[in-house]
Amino acid sequence: ILSNYRPRIRQIFRERLKDFSVEIGTLSEFEKTLETSLEIWATGPRSGAWDIKTDLARNQSFFFLTNSFLEVINSKGNIWALGDCAESTPGWPASGVIAVRQGNFLKDYLITGIRKPFRAPRNTLNILYA
Image 1 (cartoon, rainbow, N blue to C red):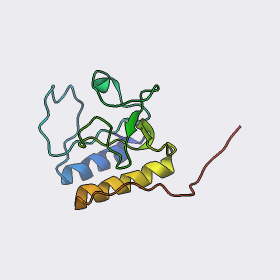
Image 2: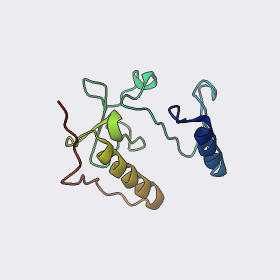
Image 3: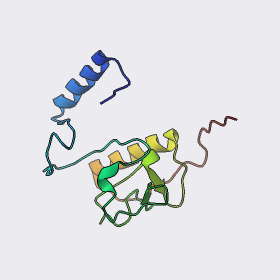
Image 4: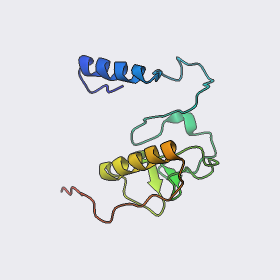
């Protein structure tokens, strides 16, 4: 976790997660079966090799395809993808600004259970470079 940060920052973060009874590890450490009430995978721009053999909807670049609720298509409504590992329908940009808003949206849904579609902001910060 937070491999780009100094060891002390990483330790503080691990301790804080432990306060919330969050168990941290790799899939190989947990073997093949996990019994959890909620799993959160932070993957970066691509989801990883574990899901290649699933029937979860992907585009040609292997990004997850999601519906307007950020649910992965073909996931029976129990897997969400957001940020830069997902291509959202109807095609919101994969950007940090959108990822933060999608994260808040999903947090609110998981806490309240109120199901409503994600609405991307009309204007976002875009950095262009040449």
